[in-house]
Each structure stands twice: as structure tokens, then as C-alpha cells.
Amino acid sequence: MKNLLILYIMLFWGYMTLHGQNKEVLYDFIEIPQALLLNPGMNASYNWYAGVPLISGIYAQGATSGLTVNDIFAADGLDINQKVRDRALYALSKRDEVNGIFQIDILNGGFRGRKDPSNFYSFGMYVEGYAQNYWPEDLAILAYEGNADRLDQRFDLNDLNASGQVINVLHFGINRQLKNNLTVGARIKLYSGILDINSTGNKGYFVTSEGQNNLLRSTLDADVRFRSSGLDALINANDNGESLSGLFTKRGFFGGDPGLGFDVGVTYNLNEQLVLTGSLLDIGLLYHTSDVLNYTLKGNASLEGVEIILPDALSDPNADFWQELVDEIEELIPFEENDKNYVTLRPIKFYSSIRYNFGKQGEPKQSCDCDYQNDSDFRNLYYLNSVGGQLYAINRPRGPQFAFTAFYQRRFGDVLALKATYTVDKFTASNIGLGMSLQAGPVNFYIMADNILSYGNIADSNLASFQLGLNIISWDGN
Image: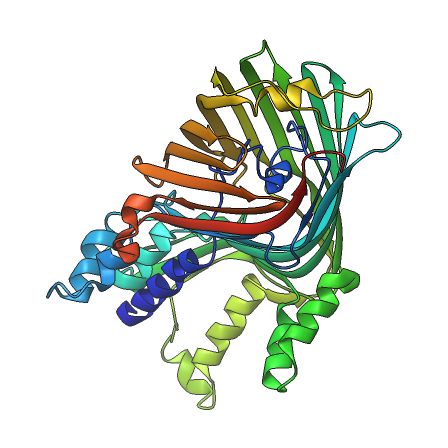
């Protein structure tokens, strides 16, 4: 059991190399078109832009709370079993977790309307995957210590709480300036689910007490489920030597689970220098219908093990008492397998910010040779400095998670913009991020990273992320 628990910890924290959540450096970084994905109502000052396919947006972030890889596997001369006990088993709670996301843009572009230049349209396609896994506090103790010394203690089955998903997203958005100081936007998303795994909302307990006919009496009250879509096909393809990339492509291009979602956002200029923004992302769901495989365990049973009553048991010398016990358990708590369709909700994200611009670097330029003048877009670009705060929240099975960010942005003409952030959330209180947008003629290159103070030893970090991309941008009508 101890070795199994160590293996679970390895898998549990292995998520952090692939996944993550908050994009606080990119949010409202208006020089970068990909920021429209975080707020479809952002002030978009471009005439048009085109992301370089497959490299316009590459993002990965991972986060853990309560424990790092280094805490368990550092070569510090300590016994690994002792570290598991002190730093994981008796230190973590059911609210500690690993979670994250990766995202790769396949296509990304946008253009301003010809007939009505107050409208800006954006479109694209990206692949996204996320994973979330809470520490199973009670079940970890049960696996490590057993139940002999923990009579009458209930081990909560709700501690089993994990999910993961990979989807392809086709999106189209419209951004419109309603007034000189108000911009709103919305984006519709068509999802195609590639892979879904989840075991959430579990109920029940396991408890051991003193027995009447035997020394111990064990009670299991379970309502547990594991649901998957696409997993069985991937396993079969791998076993049969088939191409996994072909299967991913087929399911990603609307051969998988269908879904629908939308984003909304707004930017409001309180005055020439003070700006408020907000957005809600991924308000949507997926309907899992293809390659579905589910497992359920539901029922209640109290047993005292194999009961042999003498001399009655001697009357049937061929009796298999162990099999009778197994049959009794399966009758009381049936383990079932089915292929019923199911629905999952996307994890809704919320962003908001307040920004103060100061230090003019010149007068705003015209966006095109037309009557339309998007003053609210350009007034933000001709200030040298911006300072402010951001709030981020995401819906999770054990309640919403929040992050608070303070930022400073500095512009150097039309060529270079830098942004620095300081973020506090459940994973770290010392997260300093940096982002850069470089404009060389029509070519825009951007790169950003989170929690940069931890990059000297990633294994000892609770959070790490990076993002980069390459775009072609037209800022005027030519």
C-alpha cells in the first residue's frame, strides 16, 4: 500500500508539467491580439491581424498547492516514506490540488468591418486540455495505514475528486464600440470533445467498528462513479498500434463530443485615463455521446468477513465461503458498467480589471482613412504607463478559486511594451510575472512567463507557466 501511495503522488504531481489556469499577464495586454480571447470586449485597435498558424499562441501552465515535486523526490538523504508521511499524508487536506491547462492556437485572425468600422471580427481554432485533481485525504490515510487502528473513523469517499478534458474549439467573435467610452464583445464557441475523464460528486463512506460475530465489522456506503468519453478508443488504438494522432484529429474536427459555449466582455472608460474591464469565459457544456464508458458503485453493505458457523458448516464440505462473501458484497453494492451519454459543464472563468493610464507619449493616430475614429482604442496606446489591479476567478468542484493581481505596464513608442504582474492565489503569494510585446513593422512577437522567481528550481515551485506567439498586425488602413 505504501508503494502504491508513492506511485499515486508521482502521478498526481505529474500533472503540473502540462497544465494550468490563470493568464494574468496576457489579460488586457491590448498590444497582443490573443488578449481578445480573454476579453472579447477589449479595446481592439487593429485594422486586421493574422496569427502564424500553430505558433500564434502556445501556452502551458501548472500549479500545485501544499506540496511540490521537490518536497518528495529531492536528493536530501531523507527516507522517502518519512517524507510521504510528514509532507503529504499528514500535511495535505482535501482542498489541496493539482490543476492546469494547455492551449495551442491552430488558427487565429481578425479584421475590422468595411461597412461599419466600429465592428471588429475575430475567429480561430485552438486545442485546449485541462486537468484537476484534489488530494484524497481520507483515502490516502486508509491506503497507507489501513483501518485496524482507526475503528469508528469514517473515510469519506467524496475525497475522490478528479477530472480531465481535451477539446478542440472553433470560435467566432464580434467586438463593437457602442459609444466613445464603451466597447462590448461576444464570442460563440463550437466544442468538439476529444477526451473526457471525470470522477466528481462522489458520496459515501467506509468505516470499521467492533463486530458481533467476528472481531471487526466493516460498512461501506457508496455512491461513486467514473465517467469517460474517448478513453476506451485511445486505449484500443494504442494496443492495436494505430495512429493516436489520427484519432485525435478525427475526434477534434467534430467527430467527437459536440458542445456549445460563449464568452462575453466589456471595456468602459470612466474618463480619458481610468478604464474598467470585465469578461465571462466558457459559459457552455459538452454532450458526451461517442465512445462513452462509465463505471458506478452504488449501495450499502455491512459485513463481518467470512462467517463459519460450526457445526452447521461441516454439513457441506464443498462450500466456498470466500466466494459466498464476494457474491454477497456484489449483491449489496453492485458494480456496474454502462455507456450512457452524459453532460459536463465547462469551468467558467471570470476576469475583471481597473487600469489607470498616465504619461502621454503623443497624440493618437488614425486607424483608417474613414469617418470612423476609435478614440477609446487609441487613447490607451498613447499613454506611456498603465497601472492597476485584476481579479480572476474560476469555477471548481470544491468551490470557486480566486487570484488577485497588481500590474504595471510600460510602452516604448509603437515598438515595445512590457508588463509586470504580482499575483496572490492559493498556490503562491510571491508570483511575479513578466510579459513583452515586440512590434517590428507588421510582425508582432510576444512572450511571457509567470512566477519567474521559481525558475531556478522548477521542481520546488508551486506554479510555473509560459506563453509565446507570432502575429502579423495591420494598425492602419493600408
